[in-house]
Image 1 (spheres, rainbow, N blue to C red):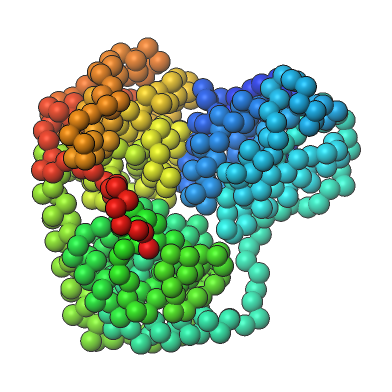
Image 2 (cartoon, helix red, strand yellow):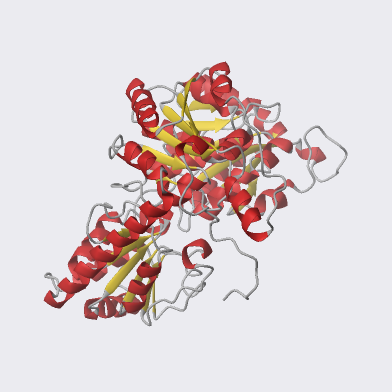
Length: 546
């Protein structure tokens, strides 16, 4: 508790168990940190991740040992892939039985290795006197770039042990960036290359947001007239109504042609994930300036001309200081080309989604800069929620980077705790919703202003479309038509089913206005089919990847 309080932790997500009850008792005794009890440990991890992404602060979850820790692994994997600062406190069996595999309750062989596969680091406390310093060190590791989840095992006998309260190290993490005596030579070369560019493009990823470099990205774009592509994680680094914003549209053919015409690409905190580059088949400009705090990222997916390693905010601030104060006049035609290409790309996508464009417009009209929109992996999210639904501020658009279904409600739960009193909208498909539907009870109990929009097409829509295209038959993808509204009401959440765009807009507006949990079930079939069935980026591996 000392370590958590000193790190500024205000909330933890988890489930009480015989192997973590002393932790929960301490939470109750101190009363300084709120405990949110979820219905499944994967949600605890997902909620901690969602909280961290929206707040920019440490997310914390508490699980039992063995099955409880194992249940959390899906959410921890997503936090690891997303670089989220998450602390996982888990129980462990009694120290004297560790490693004996004698069947102690909740025992799992080599739990540390299990957790190590999805955690940045795993720490096992060996003496009661080390609990505080171990947790403090784990917090430092989780919040130090490159950020990621850190798991701490605390054996149950040590949780019950008495120990001195004083004499451990001072607060850790978050004190600020260390001063540099001089910028690395690569930073100066990056500034030179960027300053000479006449057709520049910035590709910003989640690392830019984690570094708090939004202002620097926007300032650089406007200074040099660069179009700004983003990954899903970086949406809003430049408001998407800015004419230089291309947004999350790297899949569009004309956008890719524009990228091919660029003379410099400035990658900021991005790994160029497979879905955004057609599994690295996309051609990048001959000059690539890669800015990343993780030294393993540059050249991982594409070769970099200049590897400017360091904190994105620091590197960009240095670059801006080296550039001319006024934009090059000859860049004006490039600015116009960027705006024109982005506009046509959005138009093509609107045409492709057909009747769902009316849902897009209805929802867009109801959003303000404070509303967080969380997307589970579902067709409306992939096609328009994550690409056309406008984003004007970073940390308000959340999407699973592992592309798994089922984390939308978990992320929304954590996001809502971080975003109070402003609302959170969760876009989820009927298949993904059922993986965590019981968390409606958590949202109701906590009275979180989450509006869950379930797009109901009776099955796993993307997989159904892929099967139709590749095999001409279906198996395992049709899920029937559960009464989602009845389920929501049974768990304490008001609900309404809609079958028209007008009804959709009215229902969501009423839900947002009420500032309480609400579920809107959308009959996708009644809305109408898209112009072209969406199959994502999946295809048989007929040709080798790059």
